Length: 234
Image 1 (cartoon, rainbow, N blue to C red):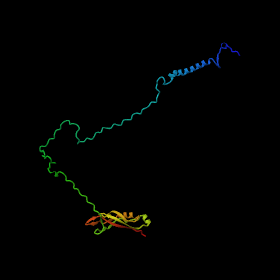
Image 2 (cartoon, one colour):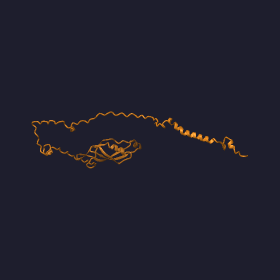
Image 3 (tube, helix red, strand yellow):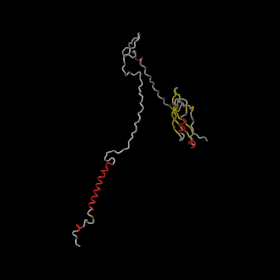
Image 4 (cartoon, helix red, strand yellow):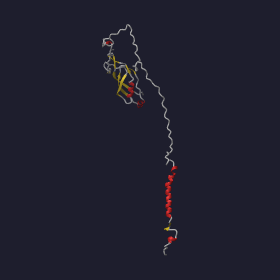
């Protein structure tokens, strides 16, 4: 088919491929309008936007400060007690009149270097207290020979415990006892004992009382042995 050399002149519209000739200008114009709206609209709307162009500070919640605490009540001025014997701290206003001496007043002539006018210092000073040397405790002596055995005059008898009675334990408990000058037992220890009976014997012996033991007319403590017998009645 022969090409139409004058087609572009005879047809009023020009097509580029499948698109019209006005497609590109319309697209450019529409994009320009969109870009202009993006740039111009925020500028025009700035006066109506709060706190952007005016520099106004946003509103904050006011902070209410608590009232200051009340002042403590004023304490009264406390003055120290006045000591009449204390030295004055203020200068006197004038000179007081000297007390007149009686007509029969005579000064006492006291020699230099004496105390109270008495040349003998032994009459002035109190004598030192007398130091009493403590007496040494008398050592207990063993019963025997001239030392007679004291006689028991009081005290509690030994009592069986329920455990020892239920076990049927019997026997002798030999105790060494120290008798004081007043006849009371000062110390006691078991020399030979029986299980479950030793403490019962010691408790009884520590309550015993004896007649004082005399040596050259002076009471002395003594050491002796005592026997406590435990027997179950049948």
